[in-house]
Image (cartoon, rainbow, N blue to C red):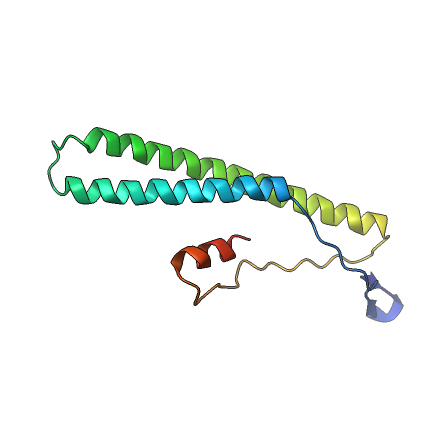
Length: 125
């Protein structure tokens, strides 16, 4: 987009798309891994019930730590991906001598009606 004298904005007409297939593949793998860990932890919790001396209590604690670790890895990966995408936008703007950069944040959009797992996948695209 270009901002002209008098406040008029024009588009160059050529769209661009940031592609990070490798990072997204890792992100999806970590998401699936986290989903499996959460399901397993929920199952352990149902088996343990209120018995604090159940034989699965130790495994459940280890599983919670692993869930936290996977969550931290996903957060770091998401931050790196956001930084790379922002850098790509700035590089494209510099290359096209743009005077205005407009980036739309789609996080507020909600994926609905596809089932819990597919909604989660769509919301993290």
